[in-house]
Length: 201
Image (cartoon, rainbow, N blue to C red):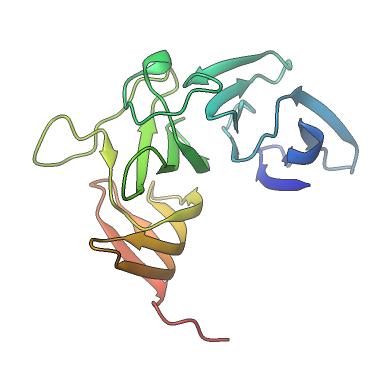
């Protein structure tokens, strides 16, 4: 049950082999090896130095090129909505990860502990320090109540491009449907690149 993949600067393809509880790497020559053993890994990203970030048990692990594996963000097995730095932060359901060329890690999440469930986007530097988004308050550490993101990537300009798929709860049982490709700029503003609420087969 492979679920997610990321491509490194050298052409290696990193795969979350969820059903086998492993993170695999496929070399350009097709050779497959295991780089880490983690329970049901899902979202995955790799930086320019070949450091892999992967989600397991509601936490984000860091896997070095040597294979050394450690918890980078969150607490394995703990579910929460805390938005602090390193071990102080917690996650709900991490849906997607992406790393930009400067090493900033973007985390798209569904916060399952809240009602209605919020979809958020957070970002962290290479040391796990949370990076604030520009906004009216200096404490804006998440872009909250955004489109439900199932996949994200960072383009050459540093904007986050995401697949927004599913429903965002509004109020009184109503919801907004997304079948969109969206963009977030450095200020956190979201715009639609393609798609609409209507599904066209």
